[in-house]
Image (cartoon, rainbow, N blue to C red):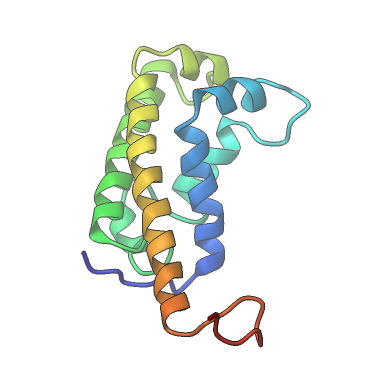
Length: 144
């Protein structure tokens, strides 16, 4: 696996939580369906398809918000699964219709696989930084 790094880490800080939200039916029902909450499916979709990645063509995000070719492949699967549900229920359907769609479990499954890989890759990158001597907070020196 080649880690291409992240040129736009702020983008990834939006992408990873959006993928995790798509992987969590509990989050979806407790947050997205609560009209008092800011986050909903539309917000999550904008993050992954419009603002910080293009789940329909994720190869362009390699090295910007996606670290590896595996992440690109898994994001493409997620994009395809979501697009199939959107095609079935209609782009303007309420969140409930998406969550009740027979295709929604495929979205959740694709997101779960991608979330696992993204988090593992971020932890590996953090480990490499630590091994290279980078410490937090800055100036704390090396650990013994």
